[in-house]
Every structure is written in C-alpha cells, then in structure tokens.
Amino acid sequence: MTVRKIVMYPADILEEQCELVSVFDKKLVKLLDDMYDTMIEFDGVGLAAPQIGINQQIAIVDIDDDYGTIEMINPEILETKGEQTDPEGCLSFPGIYGVVTRPSYVKIKAQNRKGKVFTFEAEDFLARAIQHEIDHLEGVLFTSKVSRYLEEDELEGLSEE
Image 1 (cartoon, rainbow, N blue to C red):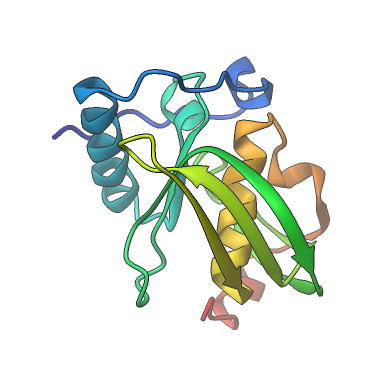
Image 2 (image 1 turned 135 degrees about the vertical axis):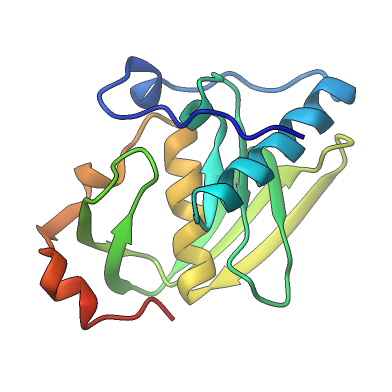
C-alpha cells in the first residue's frame, strides 16, 4: 500500500466532473487501499480520487465510528433532510476552514469495491463528510459553500465531534 500525494487547489482536476467507474479489478482494490493509507497519513476523515489526481468517481470516508471505512464508487445522493452548520476543512486546502451548511441526513446509493450496489444512510458529521466527498466527485469544492472563513484561534475553541 502506498501513500499518494495530495493534489492542492487550484489544480484543475479538483473542479472537474469525475468519470464513472466501470472496471472493478485489482487495480481498483489497490487504489482504494492507497486512498485509505493516504487519508490516514494526512489525518483526514475522507478522501476523493481527484484529490490524488484520479478523475474517477471514487471516495472514502472514515470518521472513527461504528461504521468503519465507507467506500463509495459511483455514489449518488438519493435523499437529504434537515440542516447542520459546522466548520469544514479539506486536505486539498491546508489550513483553510470555513462554516458550511449542509443537510444533516443523507441517503446514498453507491457501489463497493466489487461492484455490488448498496444504499447507506448517515446523519450529522458522517452525513457531512459523505456529502463533502461526493461534492469532490462533481467538481464542487467546499469553499464554494463557505458562509464564513474561520481564523485559527476560532478553530482552537471548537472540537469537531
């Protein structure tokens, strides 16, 4: 397994619609494993393929809860409800944090590493992380949704979870 280099803004790939995955093979498994190692190495809670320079609809989320690592290939949001407003950051924007409002509930449909379709429901911080990563696959950056940027001293008083 390999830690990949994080693509930093303003790289074009971060604002492109990613291509659907159609081949579920050993290369995909290795890529997912590398994405996990990269996310952990850089202390993230999620990572999307364009953040490591790959224009495919692949994202992972792991917020250290009961769900473990959620691998989403070709994800699609089926339903959202509610609202939450909290700080967000992004590995492709080091040191930049902002307040973002998102739905507090999300239901998605995606494929796993073997191509099997599944649905998944999430609330609160996990829902936020999933939506953030799916946005990446559509070329949407969290900075386009920020209502207010946070200074470093403001962050110290906050704890994400």
